[in-house]
Length: 371
Image 1 (cartoon, rainbow, N blue to C red):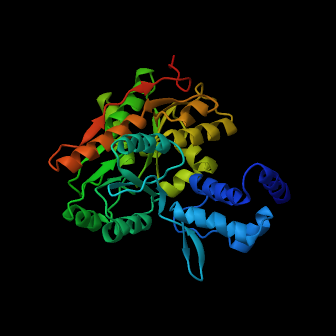
Image 2 (cartoon, rainbow, N blue to C red; image 1 turned 45 degrees about the vertical axis):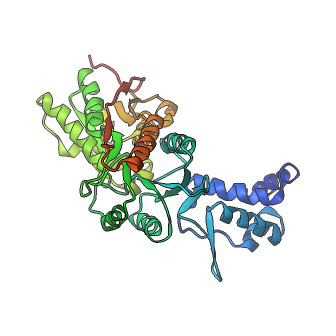
Image 3 (cartoon, rainbow, N blue to C red; image 1 turned 60 degrees about the vertical axis):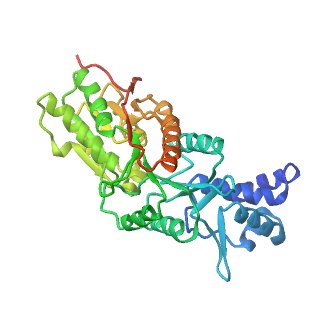
């Protein structure tokens, strides 16, 4: 299989420069999250053998990635993925965007919205991602504080549902009179503005949609380490309590960032919690996809046997075998608003830059009305 891959790469040589093969391959690995911040790249010898090109050509590709800020070389050790993945525009006025992820799910639309507004305003943009890891966030913040001259920082918090050891660095950045604006979530321990979806209302809306269809035994799957998960759970509770329905702890699954990646393989855990339920509210569309996959694999039909109402309305919701009803996340609009509010904060530090979007729901085929 590997040999076929090498042949395919060599066939591209006549179409694009040889060094560009290396550049494209590494970029794909990064943007598909197969390589993350701090990960070591294959050696020049290994890349040379993989693509059938000279070490000098490989080195040229590596140098290009270094200039773009995607990777950094460490003398005597090799090349590593940088925490700062893009330098869209160099200039005297720079804004840093820190996201948990970049290349998947709803994040590209959010980032593109920010880029569009900030670029039009003449700002250079540096983008970093943390993979929702606290230590990665700390490295990024420390670099912003110690090494960079920036006019603003737009951040998606890392594991905002848990106590965070990096809050002191945020306070240090603010003391330098650099405005900080959170998007998608926020840290309750910091009195700083945020632009996000009203996640509590989103959880309520998904659950209430199922209640209106006659469902009463509704399971829930929520993230424990992100603030969005806790708020969406609270909305789920609000809707149940409004109908006088008592919470059944045995129908709740709490997951963290690592669980989210592997839940699709955890049939026993999911099916045990879904037992006796006619519906489910997953934390987001990634979890909805996992639930639907597990159900179909175990001959549980959607929506005949189980209805699903999710949150975020990403492309994934549309691509499920049974398209999923999902509460709409504003994505690009949220990114644009966050960028515009950052520009206002730069001009006036007293500007009220907190905004929460009121959710709407997109109804598809994953829910049915009970007889």
